[in-house]
Length: 135
Image 1 (cartoon, rainbow, N blue to C red):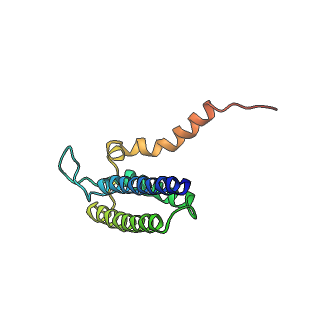
Image 2: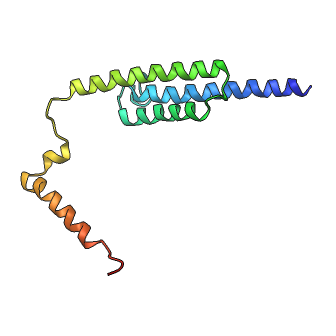
Image 3: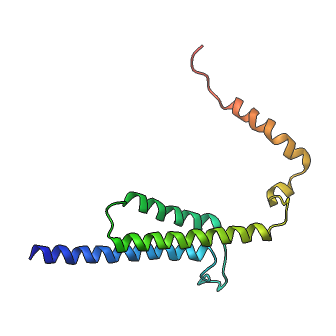
């Protein structure tokens, strides 16, 4: 009887694990622009959050290595492979759509004098707030 309960609990945990993996994959797909944003209806590509979800799934795979069923391992590996390919495609498309030699908006707003003065100002602020212990 204990085997039946353990088997049932194991099956439920396996199903919950697969659902968790699929939810994480769905979030990554949303940020990769594969799923339209439910609020705006548009596909937005946000690479940093997508990478975060992919990294979470990779960490999960490493931490659970040897403890998963063959089905769980197969699903997790398949999802990761698919998301990695989608990430490469999305980042390639983002690089292709960005003009070569473009600078960030914050850098464009600064004048050349401000940009050149930044390293000296940064070094100066480090000197002001450093504390010496000893001689």
